[in-house]
Amino acid sequence: CNDSLTINDNVRLVAMGNLRADKAKQKRDQLAEVHGEKVAVDDANVFGGLDAYEAVIDHPDVDCVLLTTSPGFRPWHIERAVKAGKHVFAEKPVCLDAEGWHACQRAHDLAVKNGTAIVTGTQYRRQSNYVEAIEKINAGIIGEPMSATARYCSTGIWYREREPG
Image (cartoon, rainbow, N blue to C red):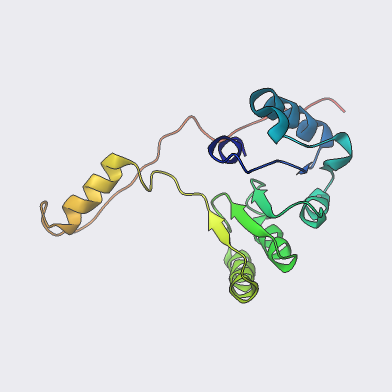
């Protein structure tokens, strides 16, 4: 969301949803500190609960939905957004299993018919050292790859301590 608000002057954030509305309000306030009037989300347009995504998708001022939800729910959120005629940016992974893949495929087929876009976040796709390595492989500079191993090292997946109550 921060990136979308940063790179385009024509983007406004008008609705937010989270399992917990208080967490969405907290994030809204953080974004507003950085992006000012581009964050146009009043309390009535911050939604909480398991159905918060539906309220965001159904909001009349929403043209594009940014899905940064847990990946287990994402395929059905994508499908719901496309059915509502919304463009979708979905973080990766978009699905975790065959059932989710089929939901994403249905959403894709519908998006093609109704002219909406589904875009997935990519990581390092345009990073110069990755691009250069692929160019060298394709040019045959290192010969024909026989096998490859990949590792991704990060600070780890987020974790939140259980809160009282």
